[in-house]
Amino acid sequence: MAQRLILAIAPSLLRENHLLWLRDITQAYTQSATLLNRVILVRLPVEIRHLHDANAIMEMDTSTFDPCLLISAQNNEDFALIGMQTDDTIGLTDKLFSNREDTELTKATFTAKLKQFLEPGKPITFNGGVLSLDDNGDIHLR
Image (tube, rainbow, N blue to C red; front, side, top):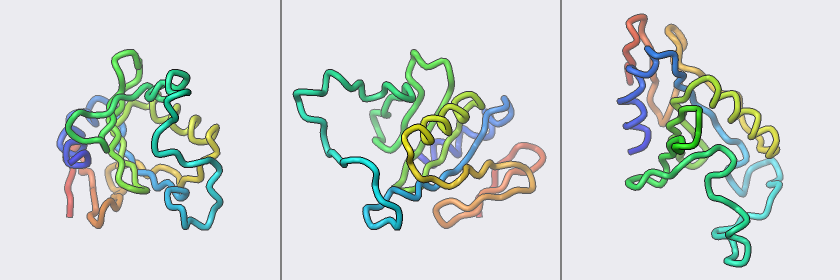
């Protein structure tokens, strides 16, 4: 659902100089060839929940209808819609958010591939489909 919403909104925001990108988080699976660098917690213990705001680092809120869809919080000056599916992330963001996301991933020492940006003449593959952007700003999925 998150991916469909992002793709539906993308053409209008791309015209406003927002970016549509994909990223593969190579450390997403526990059987990944790279060592996981942190303890995996399903829920923070009650004793320390007050120390860790759920949306503190990237200032994102979870959608009420799809837990895999994140949107920039009201206090976030940058704009972002992020859809997550296992190890794949699709983002519709402004340039500032995109750059900050890169910085925070590096700080967290997560292993991830470089983002693929959707641009005219540079199709990207996502969820078994190929997304392309034409010169008029229309997105095509095949």
